[in-house]
Image (tube, rainbow, N blue to C red; front, side):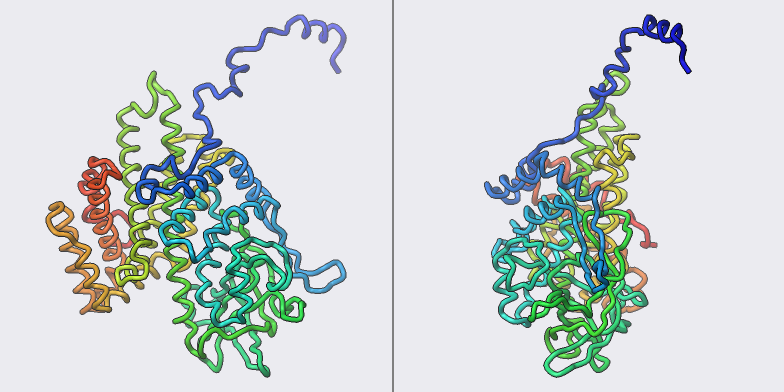
Length: 524
């Protein structure tokens, strides 16, 4: 216990606060947060690719301090699952934070099929920079649109309202819907041909029994799922709410995944106990039908990774422009200048590749280009974000700063919708279509750069060898995929420089340092 004499001594001995202590909270030599910004106009490449006042307004809205606060809150307060009501009845309710619903309302416009493809994809790019977690349900909803033709007309009618409505009620009573995918099973993962869930016809309906190991956005209004119908993999749609207004109690969520990142978005394990469903397409056409949806989500994964790369770069650049060391701003130190130049070039090339594939999505080049982009850009993201994290030093490793969230999210897109090997093997499969290889040949404009010509020559030789030799194609799948990625990127860098979208020196740097590949694992 402190006595009176010690209290008197302490009062008399109080010194004026140290300048170091008083300034500790005023960010002395600390880079400021990018608290409020226009995510679109602050990126010259985006505004060059598609000048748009509506995109500028969207970028301003997403980059506001209010939107960023909601993004933080939606991750600090992740979803929770209530499997049963207090009375013991099946509930199957996932509760999200109010901030999650706010962000979904901001982003629902990316599901509009009437929006031109490039404009929509840039909006998705911007939305990923705010919070990648909410993009998952929006991406699945957008991808599921073509399959709604197999459902009662009311589903398409409500979809076209393009409105977010979080209420857990029948879709006809809602102002908008979201759609989910429930494909992966415990024993098979990406090998969906090993699925064990079964479908049985009961009168005019189909019921599904089985389980799924990874189902994101469990509060979606319905889920596309695969099951065996008479031993044939078939696609079905399971609504949350049945036509009589009751819950589809055969759809039961076992638990939510404790994920590394994307905490705003729920991912679950699902059990089907005679879950009532609609058949999508004909029996046995399940894989063919779901791949139409997956092709869309794979490009969206690549867009998400390009957005994460760009966001990490901008945070790192902001830091080196405002932080001093050894009497200079970090940006003026040669070693840091070298690193930031390298990161800038990689960032530009990643964005150019995904938006190139956006422009050819429906074409033969898109058939091979989408898995190439997903493989390459998504695989680049984790190490790129790590380098940017290191630029910030200790602050980059602290959860209060934005880089930690970016880093935790960075591996996901490479895993979701098919990991690296799955993408590389899909590239090899697509190369057996002569129209695809012809599209690749047309992409090579000879004479732009000698290193680029050499890259195209080597990778096309490998492509034709892969068409002839299965063993060669399997062993070299990653190498060929990486080779195609940097070849396309090289051409896009040159074109962008010629149009004045990027600086010529960045195109030259890319060509001087990226041709030849060998920058990833698995290319021995």
